[in-house]
Length: 236
Ligand SMILES: C[S@@+](CC[C@H](N)C(=O)[O-])C[C@H]1O[C@@H](n2cnc3c(N)ncnc32)[C@H](O)[C@@H]1O
Image 1 (cartoon, helix red, strand yellow):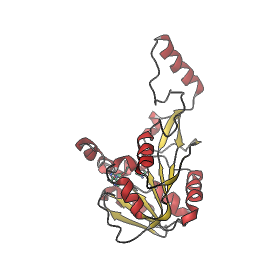
Image 2 (cartoon, protein in one colour):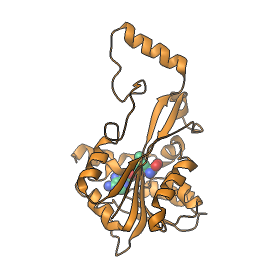
Image 3 (cartoon, protein in one colour):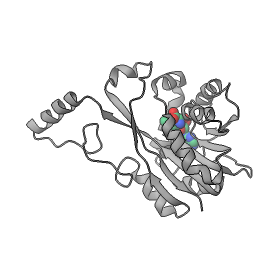
Image 4 (cartoon, helix red, strand yellow):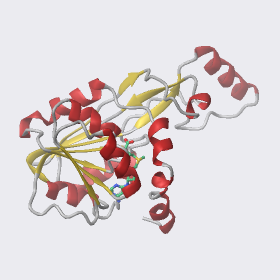
């Protein structure tokens, strides 16, 4: 992990309210898919890495899952604590996952929403296995964006064609499917496979049209919709 990455991962807390207002949430179906996958080991309590302002935390807690949140930025954690104040079973520990002290606790589910790439790749998989009970589940997920306005897609694609410019891979216009072993999560997928500490690896993709956030981001993403893709794996 480079010094620049280490520095950037602490930028989220500079304006946690703005972050919270600008982020779309996670759909009920994603939570159900993760809980179904994890059902074998019993999900309670769950551990969340990089909980931020609690967007995913609240979605799981509303389903009755107690969640221990690990979040290194106290400013983000403050918003999380306010958001989840009425939800039973949510606790927050201020730490990076690399140095977090489980103190003998083991979890049935470890989930991480759009944060796994910020955790040091040298230790994240081994620490995840250590935090899980035998058979416990790991669920990592990210949002992706795509253009939902076919006319706009047609015009932009046409403009690229007229100028004989190839559409760059993994951009909003890229029509190629992005399976986990090639797309945004490719690195995480390869590392998870190579680590050898997980079984039953799976990657799911959902597609929905989330309510736009009530923040200035709205103006910049008027026709973007979210895809949520959990990477799932079990600890043997
Ligand atoms: C993009 S935000 C995601 C927050 C939240 N999970 C969500 O879905 O909105 C990334 C979060 O990861 C946290 N983070 C950065 N480095 C971390 C680390 N080493 N261990 C745990 N969390 C980390 C950041 O503080 C930030 O809250």
